[in-house]
Image 1 (cartoon, chains in turn red, cyan):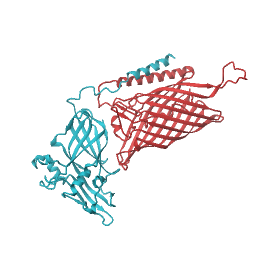
Image 2 (spheres, rainbow over the protein chains, first blue to last red):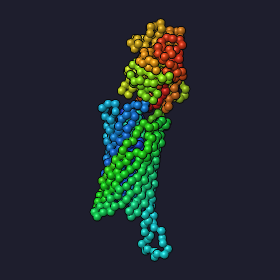
Image 3 (tube, rainbow over the protein chains, first blue to last red):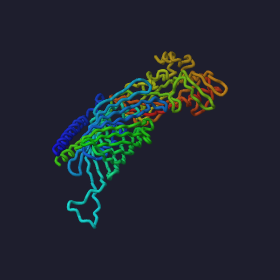
Image 4 (cartoon, rainbow over the protein chains, first blue to last red):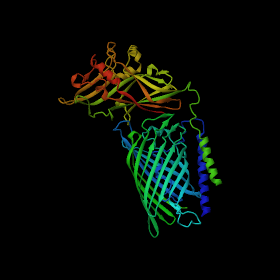
Amino acid sequence: MQNFKQYIFLLLLVLFAQIAFAKVINHCDTRYEKSIKPYCDLCGCATNNGNFGFGTLSNSNFIGFRYIHQSFKSRDGIFSDSPSSNEYLNTYQLWTQVPVFQSFYITASLPYQDLKRTFESGSTTESLKGIGDANVMGWYKLQFLKKQNNDSIPYPVGRPLSRHSIQIGIGAKLPTGEFEERLTNRVNPGFQVGTGSFDGIFSLGYNYGGDKIGFNALFTYYRKGENKNEYRFGNQWSYAGNLYYKLALNTFSLMPFVGISGDDYDTIKQFGETLQDTDGQILNGTLGAECTIGQFILGANASLPISQDLFGGNVQANERLSVYVNFSL
Amino acid sequence: MKLFKFFIAILLCNTIISCSSDDDMGSLDGQFGNLVIKFDNGVEDQDFIFGVNYSKSANESYQLETLKYIISNIELIDADGTTFMYPTDDNVFIVDEADANNAGEIWITLEDIPAADYTKISFGIGIDQERYGLGAEGQGDFLQTAQDEEMLWSWATGFRFIRLDGVYSDNSVTNEALNVHMGSVGTSLDNYREVSLDLPNTVLVREMAEPEVHIKADISLVFDGQTSVTFSEGYSQVHTDETTTPIIADNVMGMFEVHHVHNN
């Protein structure tokens, strides 16, 4: 099993390193050619999966496949009665959490984006498909230990684990997806398979795992880089909190959960100038469940916005669905 | 552990060597580009649509079947204060709502503009005395265009700067004729007006880029602008009158705003 883990880790490492290098070379191409638009991003809002989390509810190690569906409605014009368009963002993602050594693990994801846009005014449909932005993070897990009880005989093996833990993550979002500058002229600049930028990701999480009830909280900050088109998506704060209940049955365990998640976006900058009405925030409510059967972890959740104000009210987020199948490592 | 260090090293390298903006390094001298100006007519925060009834002050309402105006003397001002006046012969346009695309926008494409970082735009509504002074011959193709678009009374009277045709209703009348045709009257009455608008973001005209300036025109301000006018009190038929036309001209001057710009 150990060999298997190392093998997978090595494989992912090589994959991401290759992607990173390939893009760096491209990124440093000093010729400014409009005809080539090899860039992408996560407008925080659409192509970003930040508050869907980097791992599973049970914080286990895995490799798996995740599908995310998001839908948005954007106003396609400058007036309050301008026609709108509906955007459907389907993300098929390979994702993993692999242990490197004790207290340290890595999460990574590589999405394939399938975006569709239909216009209210006519029957025209636009679609955009392609590899999206990969995401790699290193995590340090600080597992608290139980308070030492003075009366008890000290355990020779050390103190038992407490139910609380904290994890700190640092990582990057790589510009592996393509960013098309012309698409930013639309009202929802997030209609992209990628952001074209190299972004820093900083996370702080807290877990409580009781016998029956558990709680996870995660705060993440995305420091967005500028892409080749001098377009910089707004820095972003994401937060999520989930409360789950463990139901252990004979052959499998079920963990239903309820949670909230949100994002806060700073304004987009282009050529060093702030673009108006490009900031915003959203708060979602989530219901879902995770089920463990043997080595398999199955999960599903659905979110609906509780409150939102995106892009000066020009973009409205609708439901989000996420389904995943993971194989425990 | 070695693997991990290697991995972190890759990430660090990536961060360090990822370069940011590297265009704009060379001089812009001798570079020319295009600029698109989009005119988007609305009524307050609504999109303007022919045949839709819009209410205004004094319990009056109107609906239009013609909406067009003349834009001329488009000038761009860059960050250093240098101005660029588009060549006079080509610097006159009729913005006709009937020509609008699916999005309700009327596009004017200006070609061969010196590459620069523009921060302001100014333009005139109508035809100034200097251009009129060139005589019928001096108008080039625009004379015919204006005639075809019914934006010319007669050469002696001159051009209609804005033309709104439709009907209005109030508490006592329904669907009475509404015709607002404002212009200068020969050389005796000058209703040409100029507006100067700040651009909310710098417009970067480059050889390889075609930026867009999206201008919103609020038609409600023709009637409820600087001065609120009442159809039933002489403003349902505005033609060459020396009292009513300057008021409409001043109102029209205030109806434009740059909603946003796009740098491509």
